[in-house]
Image (cartoon, rainbow, N blue to C red; front, top):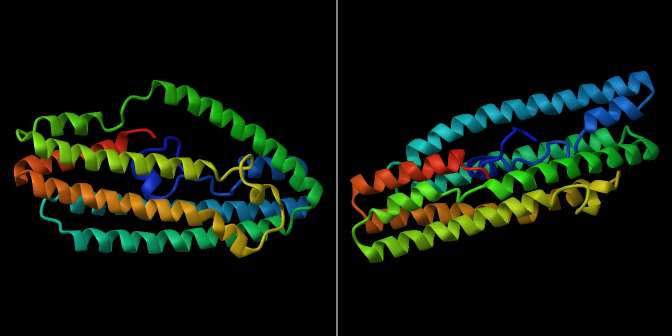
Amino acid sequence: MLVATITALIILFSGGYEIFFAENLEKGIKEYVLEKDRRNELLDMTKEIKNGAKAYNKERKANYKDFEDLYTNYNSDEAELEAFFDDLTEIQLKYQDNFVDKRIQITEKITDEEWGNIVTISEEAYQKKLDKQAKKKSKTKDPFEKTRKKISEVPDSQSQVQLLEQLDSFSEKITEFEKSMKEINVFENELLVQKTNSKQELLTLYDDMNEIRQKAFGHLIGFHQSVRSNVNEEQGETILSTFYKDLELAPM
């Protein structure tokens, strides 16, 4: 994965998906591509992708700070938030496009037999990841527990209800997005098992995920606007700051 722990904020800002669309791709190349020159060429290509991912991660972290400043500001309006997410989406689309190009370049240099072996160890590695995540998931509390506590301190009960409804809508959408993201794996998507795919076919992997992400962005904006509509600036910035920390820290 791009990082060790997936949080709501990481899911929204990058997707958190396996950058090669296959677990342990480098390990598979080292084990099963016996021709030295081609093996080294493929490993150089995977290194290039990882360096690109690092550059994207650096840009993403800068976006975190911009997002925190904008989102925790009670007076940020809907248009400002929409513009931020539009810019973020453009960056993500370019990154996804580059991933697909690189995947095609790599698989073109791998034989069918080598690819079959790589898929096998990828499936084994992904199953181990699922087992590990399942154990963590069983111990996970409500990721937005602290935000709910702050909302419970709002004096007006009707305002509490409206804020909690917006929070629930966002939580539901981010869970749906996480599920969509996890479906991009060698068990559940036949495209990832196949060695030869067109660029357009591989880009469809992102379609549902991007659509759900956009809806999650919409619910994020809705929550911010609900805070502005239901509480004063002092209360609002406390709730928004707590919500941001939940996004940044809460495992999904």
